[in-house]
Image (cartoon, rainbow, N blue to C red; front, side, top):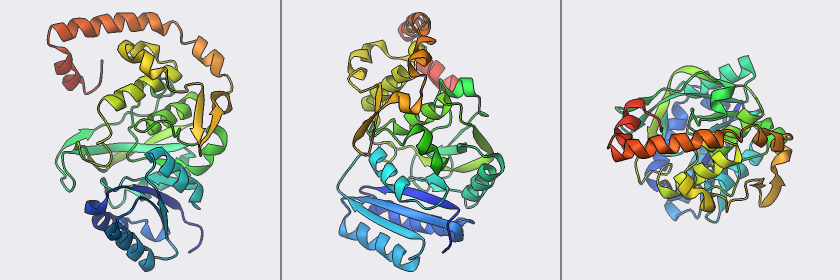
Length: 309
């Protein structure tokens, strides 16, 4: 095929229950004939290898299959990113499902507006294949808000491939929060993002899902480290500060190499200095959270507001 419009990045690890359905979902995309699909298979089983190779045999000009030892998700995404031929990239986990026109809508919006990243609403479901769940309403892009909140999630992104020249790739030291970190890096550089209207797909929010089983305390710790890196000092978990500071926050890792944050954000030191007063706001926020927790209201408010206080 000629140069594809979009490359889909798909990391696979113990994904046999989803792979056959995932390939069918790909074929349903209205943009499928103009897609490239890159599978990065971590320690694939014989069945996984057979499934992806059969799909590659069916569409030899559209499908790449890369076999690797087990590696963090960000490493696999970076590997697929550099193998991609299209100017736009889609993050699509194999345990999530997309509406058939979602990629076409996002590509059209990216081409029209020149965004660095496109996102949209999705429905969080408790199990793969279900369609009834909680709609996650993503806000319109605001540089100030997105510099402080991971407001769009990472499961239904379309990215511009060339932003890596300016801000780098996913930070490979993070196992869970690599997409959150890249989102803040884009926002800190004031690169434009945008949302498309309508639902994009169904996010499998189950403890054993490929996208969520690495969560829990590790996710909270990495989120704290990312907040420290980008000066979101009022939101950090103070009890996790010593552990979070063990990450190399003034550097990010791409392809096993450490790069200074100044490569991605030249005014990094001044960027953090401007945000130092947020530490004081953080003390007040922590005191409020402690009071609400003692009153038994903290979890209720989180559910009511659909965000963390």
